[in-house]
Amino acid sequence: MKKIVVLGGGIAGIESAIFLRKYNFDVELISDRDYFYIYPISIWIPTKEKNFEDVIIPIKDLASAHGFKFTQDKVLKVDDDSFTLEKSGRRDDFDYLVVALGQSKLKHKGIEYTYSICANPEETLKYSEKLDELIKKGKGKLAFGFGGNPKAKEAVRGGPVFELLFNVDYYLRKLKIRDNFELTFFAPMPKPGERLGENALKMMDMMFKKLNIKSYTGKKITEFTPDGVVLEDGTKIESDLTCFIAAGDGHPAIKSGNLPQTEAGFVIVEPTNQVKDVENVYAVGDSCALEGPEWKAKQGHLAEVMARNTAYNIALKEGLEKGNPKTYIDHINILCLMDMGNGGGLAYRDDKRAMLIPLPIVGHWMKKCWGVYYKLSKLGKIPRLPGM
Ligand SMILES: Cc1cc2nc3c(=O)[nH]c(=O)nc-3n(C[C@H](O)[C@H](O)[C@H](O)COP(=O)(O)OP(=O)(O)OC[C@H]3O[C@@H](n4cnc5c(N)ncnc54)[C@H](O)[C@@H]3O)c2cc1C
Image (cartoon, rainbow, N blue to C red; front, side):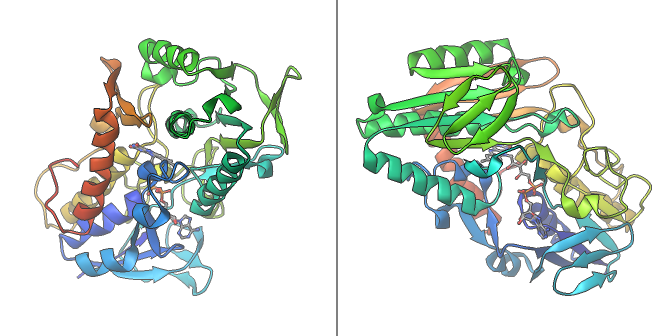
């Protein structure tokens, strides 16, 4: 049986390992964390609707449910014929390699004074602690923002910032202390969130006014300081606690290796997710460069499509499937249930439509139910719904 190594235990890596095992391949998954962190439901950690244990699945449980081997180690470099691990050094003992290491973040001046909910999970826990301290004090200034990457526009991650901002607003209202807090949103692009369409922009603007959230957009960020954010025109946003999600950048292990990659360090893949000109290496999820329309975005559901396609396309090469290779291109859309604490909005974008459908109250509970379904179905405890 062919040996397949999957690098990375996130949304793309776990889905790859699960679907490769359906073809009985000998699968080893290597990741630096011993748990699978479900980013989309981690937005509720700071507002105490979820704790850390609620948003993780130990990888050993997934390995035993699906029959793959798990090795905890850090990948330092990925080449077209091998990879290098921190503890065990260079390895080339595979027939196929699937790269699913996610992405890194751009560095900004003073970024150490900010917290991201899209990076290392420990940062979300630290943000949560700092928020608790301000709540104990009973007042404070909170800033929420995200940045762009001109070399990889699809690597911008704004949705979770809006989700956290609206959830924190609602949390403070529930605690009856919202009036003592100043909430500010900032982003360097003139129309942040515009990939969701004009209606979404108008709705966001309306929400900001209704909830008394200040907004600074269209001005580059010069630096972050311990007490705020300095913008290019000298404006200073005062902040006791800043959540900032820098745009994605290529993973260091990709940048150190020889796989074909974009200027920003994302792996160049064929629409089948095979790495360009490398027969037995695939890349899936946030690690790879996306083809497609201007508004495309790196998302969890697309990462899973890539992972399932990769398992199928490898099986096809091995004569275990019949038909044509599958590609991710037809699945490029934006689909996100954006949570707002006391409701949500279903954001959808494809070539023909761009919409944000408000789902008061029910939207929040739909996302909560999705989280429960996601965990149980990944562990094989309940059947999977088609395409989910
Ligand atoms: C807060 C948040 C909310 C989101 N909400 C949504 C949503 O509602 N809907 C949606 O579709 N998408 C959402 N996304 C986007 C989605 O989570 C990502 O697109 C998805 O996680 C990408 O999966 P991935 O496996 O490529 O990367 P990741 O999930 O980042 O996984 C990368 C994996 O590789 C491991 N790793 C990294 N470096 C190394 C190394 N050097 N050595 C070994 N292992 C390593 C990591 O530990 C991790 O297990 C959200 C993202 C965030 C951050």
